[in-house]
Length: 271
Image (cartoon, rainbow, N blue to C red):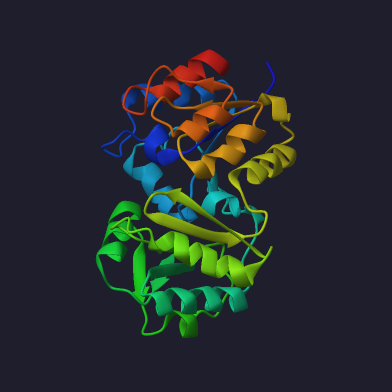
């Protein structure tokens, strides 16, 4: 049997609404790895946050070794620490984005090593760090504090006021083709280097590992998952996915993220 690669989004896909992995999903993932396949966690989170999530959800001991972080800007072998793929934004653009968000009074963060870097010590930061278990460095001026290029920046609006759409338009006016901007959920606006996507990272991983694209499978629920669902040999949307995600998929699960959708995909397409 040829090796396959399964790319799993976490929030809303592999995790249920209580943000845990069901025993059915966990056992199915373990069986896929035992059968010799690769399982790649594909998330908008930072790599360190994904590793902590795997440990919290009892997934760290079943053989998962690859994470696709920052929505595809980085792929890491978490066993060896080797970075297989990485793209970063220029600090000039990062500073301009930070200043635009500051002018509009919008929460903005980036990443420095394993830390969240932000000038906002507020509910947005608390929600993000509680969700990701990352620690934060709060600085007086984010633009001034940015010293190194990063894989992404993130604006958050927990009030869903619509202001993120205006920020997106304002940044697009000066960033041109240098930066890609998209909503990963209704409260998160992501800024990544141009060309970064889960789909392109999926292709890079398969090339690196010598896996045929037709032997790749991807599962997701949100807009930032569409590229990998489109680029995979079999793109799957879970039953609770957004309509656009379902429209892009080759297969829509009968079960949602609360009822072992990943087990359904693994049993149908891998085992």
